Image (cartoon, rainbow, N blue to C red; front, side):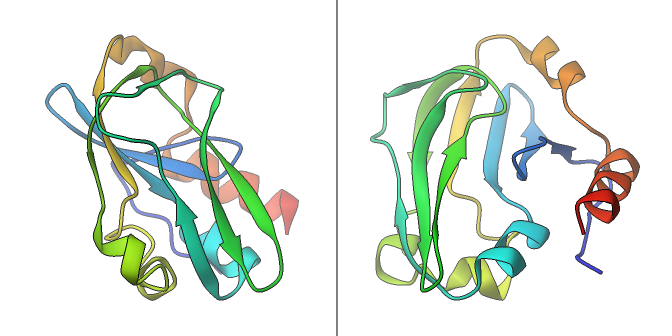
Amino acid sequence: MAKVIEGLYYSESHEFVRVEGNFGYIGITDYAQHALGNIVYVDMPEVDDEVEAGEEFGAVESVKAASDLISPVTGTVVEVNEALEDEPELVNNDAFENWIIKVEMNDPSELDNLMTAADYAAFCEKEG
């Protein structure tokens, strides 16, 4: 069973948001990194890029497949996790610690459209 962390928000495309104030740290879930296998590349936007809820903002490539990254919220990229440029496998080590982008959210109420940990765990079981 993939790890799910309480207090985060989850999307059906297997991204998570960890909220700190008006900022959201966005990454892929443990379930997603397990499904992808060994991650070899993370394609990230630039700082100051705009991301939009439900829209693609990058991709994760593994030895098995490439998967688009879909933003769970709308906002402006204020930081990218540069460690992933040299060590994309960090996502496999701990998907929740190794977020991909930090976004200043335009509309935190968008979080209401996402799943809780319990909802996401149930969603993953159905997918499984």
